[in-house]
Length: 317
Image (cartoon, rainbow, N blue to C red; front, side, top):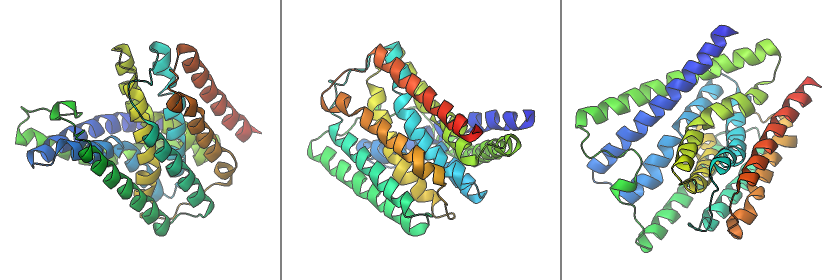
């Protein structure tokens, strides 16, 4: 058990560090190649920050643990809304009147419904994965065209990980470390988590929905908490919506090409609907621009804690 915990911690550490270095290296390489900052923000940064979750899901599929792969995505989306928004809101109220996220929110809801439908059509294979990826590409193209039409392209200074003084050698080193570290970190995390699940008699899906999901959401949570402490808690909202869209369409879209994903019955009965309910829970805050107050943050955090207890209790029963 101790060795498995060490594997999990080492895996999480590798995923966080390697993912961060990969984003920094890829962003600076893309800008050096003359790719517009807007496109870098929509693609390179978005894919890079989702790299830990993607590698974990791919590693889980290759290790014949589809419950961890699917649980990682579904659990991460639920944790993103209830924890990654809830905890920063406790620190500093999140205002929603400073940015219009309504369209992105509806896209996230659409992606959630599509994902649920695909799960009920399971087991998931490459045709389902292709459908999810094509949907993601269409969304990215539309967002890119809209941003260009409104001349809302981002400057290099607004892109995460930009360093105008970074040498080409350092860029290559960061990318290399990221590409090597991510699969090792994912393998350690999946191996340790699945071993603990087997030893404790806990289904892989529950481990994926809780331990792995929270672990892979730590970078988003850390970023949001840091932003809240600096008085910019509002950035968490856009990050959560974008991350959830990529999780549903991109991560399972890629993982589905590496093997078949059988959808656990328990996920069809409960977890997919909890994810959708959490997504609908923030509708008034998005549509009516209600602020996420500290009381709301406490409520969201307690709801998530209750969900985890229900998962564990249902298994124990």
